[in-house]
Length: 316
Image (cartoon, rainbow, N blue to C red; front, side, top):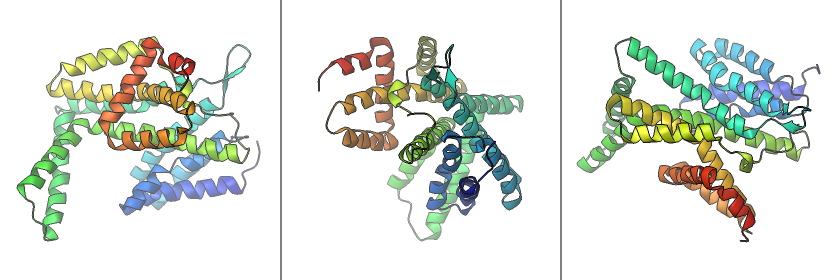
């Protein structure tokens, strides 16, 4: 094993800073949090990637003493462990003679495992405690928004009926979909940082795997059937069951959305405006759930109708 060098030391300090900045509570703290896995991804995806897991573990120990035990455990479970796992898989080979890189489609499916497990575990915990997760989230959301409204009033701002109605709508929407929103945030965090790290390494010619082409992501038939079954059940469910199935369906939709994005990437790359098309696409789906749903529909259509083959065959 190669001895750790400057890159490993910088990665250790940077990932601690990015994640530890979350205690500041500002917008920049949120930005730094989103980049917390990046140093580990750079270590894990580069040639001679043996230090990713150890640096992540050391960072978790240091955060234990620098911040709080809760922050340390959160970093270990949400950042260090999954980043190390995905790097290990992404840089491994498959096939009888190890002739191909590990499937990106399988990595996309692995993405939903941690949030699904946590969601089911939390649901079971509250159910065994005699409570409903959906009801608990409504209570907590009300508390957060009450504090926000009190802060606005403390600054001398009037809460008119129109603003109050808007806040009630946001509050209900967040309470109903909080598990899915948090899960999608985490999954997109992993994907984005992996792609950024790969791009950085490729430009410096230190990447181990040639590329991460999102157009390679495709969902298998059993998963497509599970997703559509979950979607159908969510459409006809209400109450606590509706809350559980709706959030689970939104989590399952993420690999399907990646499949849809792959189709759009194939189309965009056949035009002279690929960068502009993809920039607008990612900007819109970041702020519009309806745009994200449309991409999910493209992913499902691609599975059953082989849209990518038709796009590749057509001349743009």
